[in-house]
Image 1 (cartoon, one colour):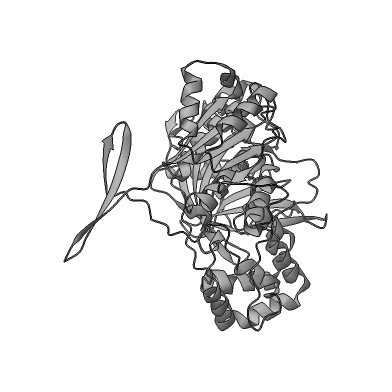
Image 2: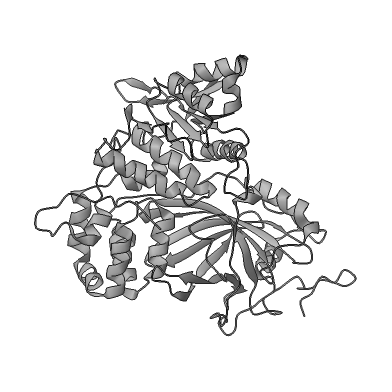
Length: 522
């Protein structure tokens, strides 16, 4: 998986900054250091159909009103009838869905989607497009190869400072910051942005399509908070690491696996979660865990603070087998088939490209010995970057949310704590399938994320008769079925399953529905 290294200039007393320093003290991409104004949400009012938000900052001597930031305007122009590699979904549908998902990051991101058929018309829509082009911040051209459309774009996009083209005619030149990006452009920072975007696009998934647009917004329009890891702290990071974590750094560099992990991470963009997590899962070691625990978790040398996304909000299921759902029953739904089988659930498909695509995913949910303790242990395979298949296992502490079927998860994953908010979206009465959604963040790594997993007892897709109900559950998550990754469940011999002795399973329901009797687990 190709990625773009973002390396720092050499620092005094270092050898090319060493691999680990290149990873944690990154070079500044274009305009990333532009001052960021936090979202202003203390007061709001509507004007001409738009919501304008202002913050009033009062001091003893004066009152200062900060102007709201203008919206970021994007236009996506797609080839009429062109299909994407996302399960042959039309590019128009993919980009319309991307426009909705951009709103999860910032309500101020506005993307209009057109197909190129309108370019040859003289109706109001074509005139509207011309007017919008004069005000847009970014033009995204996808799968446009019709020669007349290409000529129209070349003629009418001269004032667009940022144009990025995917799978379109080679006559359409990428333009960033008002400069055409081609073979004559040797600007390293521009090249890095383009390479990061191209690599992400080639992974062919909805998360990375959105990521591409966020990278461009972050580089050329205004900082994107969820990409704050692209804006390094320079010498303060180095000083923190050397002052607090010298032994851990040395031990890591002397350990082959830990050293490979750092070298691998150095080849990833700092905000590329897919690339980063594959490096981490490929080269796990106690030394890497100690390094991350010291540099990131204990001392937060990168000075990052990612938060769990609040969007999308996903409503939890409220009843099961005709009865109102309570906390105990919701936990039983997670426990699932454990007891009848050696696992609770197997993952059929997932939405997040970094965490849901691993082969042979087994879920183990169980109650601990303590009265309120509840645990989640995913067991999954990783195909390492060296081509080996290895088993991995994590252990999450699970706490009930305020509403039944919502939970807070916490895990120490290779030295970094991740906190997640999980929702049971739906589970069929016969436990033949379930859909679980999560929003999460690794705070000190500066990474936030969302995802969902479709689960069944045997890892096969739900029956066709469940299609309508499943699509309704996905819609609650803001997920299209074409966004899901199919999990490879073909070669899953000898998974390291098992739960601690003395663990407890179901408390209120049977694994197999018994409609004529009281619900009691046998």
